[in-house]
Image (cartoon, rainbow, N blue to C red; front, side):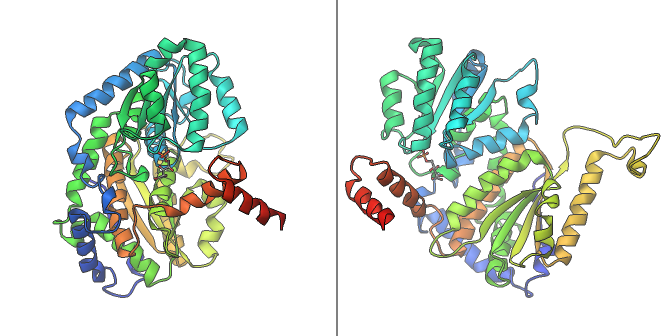
Length: 449
Ligand code: PA5
């Protein structure tokens, strides 16, 4: 079984043949990705990553994960952007929704830091950790990201204070560049276990490197199955797969047709399972950072339904017609729960009694799709058999390869992110970072005007 795509409710908004018209461009994009002749070709290490991960490497990751699992009640994963969202997406999708409250834990609690500069967040984290045996996975490709470095400073000190320097060494792992950056320097000096983020894999494409795999294994999930799902999707979306049978080619073509021909500037990724919230956050980064440049790009937004039907539903149904929706639909839930019968039937809902809760959810999904299509919102449906490691691996690779193709169709370099530097430059100038004297003077002058 595999994830599958339904584009019929999107193509009705397009002229006949609009999707097929992309066939040759998609083929050229796939050829260019494969041959390394596209823009950003020094960042194509993710393309055949799933099929190149060896059982030995999985075993090494699992063994380090097991050490952290044995020695820690809590593991803090410090990272931001591509060094954060993939791990969180998978862990939250697979974990118990109330994981932090579950007694008799079989797995350490995984929490995240280094993804903001919130003083309260960090102070509350520090407080939460003060009576815990905790470890840290410090993830930064550049090794210089301020948010992550700040969290790591705090966590390293606290871990050493609570466990002693020697023991702390065994529960701090660094995932970073092979040679460069502060995270590498600290790991070498302190003797931490390290994993390398390959040079040719950019942050937002790195979930299937140790960046995602180690935290996911620590949380107790099957990374072999995750990589297996991704490897199967790598085959299913290869450049020799015919256009009509390649879901990533079709998804890339449809969204570009909706953008270019139908003027749909915003894509809303929708789920009907709250556990997928962070998959959407990961997807938003993947597409936003890859395509939003040169004055172009679909704006990637996300909603959790049915929750957001009671907040954003009005806008989606009747607001400006510049949007389309992509729904991730999980065919079968992992648990079973029936709508209860009630003698008094005060809420009048006994007509639902005895139905699976998911049956009600599926009708909400279908009803919503039809309503939104009637309201002028094209709809793509990605159907996923089950929410498990294997299919999450498929989803991850599906969106990555579709993004690589889509960025090429849009004629941007999907693998750089020059725009991210602008805020950093201003922040460092405002904070008088050494080396930023000219920028500091310029920004102070601008503020005084
Ligand atoms: O996708 C990207 O490249 C970014 O989101 C980075 O992952 C993010 O800025 C974190 O960078 P680093 O891993 O160097 O700390």
